[in-house]
Amino acid sequence: MTSPHHVAVVGSGSLAAAICRSLAVLTPPGAAPLQVTVSARNAAAVDAIVRDCRVRAAVAGTTVTFTGQALGDDLAAPARLKPDLLVCCASAHSPYEKALQPSAWTHLLGQAGFGVTLPLQAVLAVRLARAVAAECPQTRLVNGCFPDAVNPLLAALGLPVLCGIGNVATLAACLQAALGLPDQRRLAVLGHHAQLDAPDGPDGEVLAWCDGVPVPGVTELLAPYRALPRADLNALAGHAAARLLTDLLSGAEFHTSVPGPLGLPGGYPVRVSGGALAPDLPGLTLPEAVAWNHHAGRRDGIEIADGRVRHLPQAAAVLAPHLPEFAQGWDAAAYDEVHDRLRALRRRLRATSPAAV
Image (tube, helix red, strand yellow):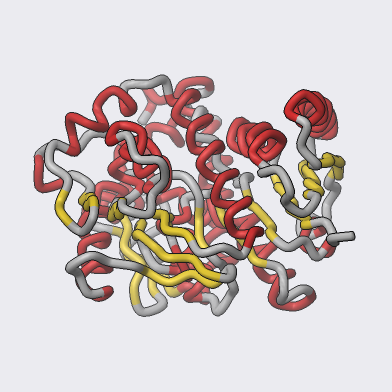
């Protein structure tokens, strides 16, 4: 009997739930049995995802089983299950905080750019990657928390990460649907997290190719998908992520586009064969594609290169009154200290109303 594959999904938010729901129904007939472990601190949310997915798997007739793991203080515990794939979908920053709990903290983020949250986005991914490196190097880490920047940070720390999910993968899935393609074998997309929203001009748009030929009208093709409520777009990201995971487990060769492959900044088209992943760029060198992603990511306010995180001028000016020693940037090796200092700043600013800023 074929040994079951094991995927551990860490988190209980909308992205984690979307991935699990799609895993329940996407496993192809004849594939090896799949075990999915859902791990998070919120035990009630974990139980709800597991119950939901068991029903979906039963109705779909797939060989996918779901179990839950309530996390305590040991947030790296899912890595010790030694799954084939470990999927990080939890961080210390919620993108919904601005709408639900506005404060001087969310005001600061609005001025500085999303990239300032990098240390908070990375906290669980760093812990999981450290556990993988130390205890289960055969496990492949897939990161869903700001992978365009977190994955390069992991690489700068010498930690393993296969790729990310969401962002360019979501945009590529939308373009695949818009172009009526059965898969992404003929499609290649170069794009950054900052381009989930429509660009200010044509020079800021993602680049896409079909059969090696540039795709015209990308902005118009993506417009109806970008107009979706963010929760709906997140569900599409989870569905595309689940397809990536099942394809990775199959060992078959396939083409897709993912953020942060092998710790690169931004998102790239890739070819995957036997679970190994490599950039697959039409008409561009890898250094050219990396430079393009650095430029596209300026809207997020940070750049990661040569082991250093650099805050761009606007973000540096906003951070300077609060964290002057880190405002211009910081070495990846200082990650733990920067995380602690930023978390303390958030705690202080959350107690201040936006009007007082």
